[in-house]
Amino acid sequence: MALRHSLEAVGTLFDVCIIDSPPQRTQICLSVMGASDWVLIPAEASTKGVNSLLCSLELLEERGRIRAFTGQVLGVLPFRDKWFGRSQATDSREAIAAMQQVAGAIPVLPSIVESERYKQAIRQGQRLSEIGYGELEYPLHRVIEALEQGQGND
Image 1 (cartoon, rainbow, N blue to C red):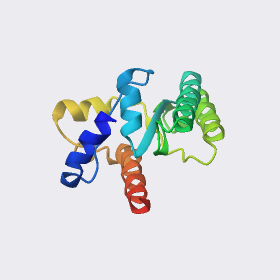
Image 2 (tube, rainbow, N blue to C red):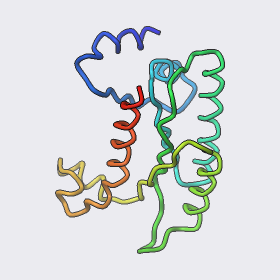
Image 3 (tube, rainbow, N blue to C red):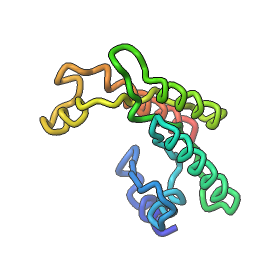
């Protein structure tokens, strides 16, 4: 409640506040969840990621039952999606398909492919598009679109 109250106090200054919390059931995570209008669930494109998604959805449902989470799930964002040239790794493809089944009506957004280009852009202080890899920005643009659509529904 304290975090929600603090965010409300500065709510008129920002359109969106993004908080990246640890995935464990820590007090930080539970506080962020309780203060959130929207939750984006990142999930590694692997069996481990599917299991993590299941745990996250169960936690959100549990917290929702006791009204400690009153927000909505914006979507699932697969990451570390492995590709070899133009072919997606079987493990990644199967994990993302499983995520779609687990997520049900929750949108599974386009995946963030595993690439050293993200680190390169960060090191250079540039956007991916500025170093010639604009296509890698697509999943992030979709997150922004989902946020904008969600805000329109509030």
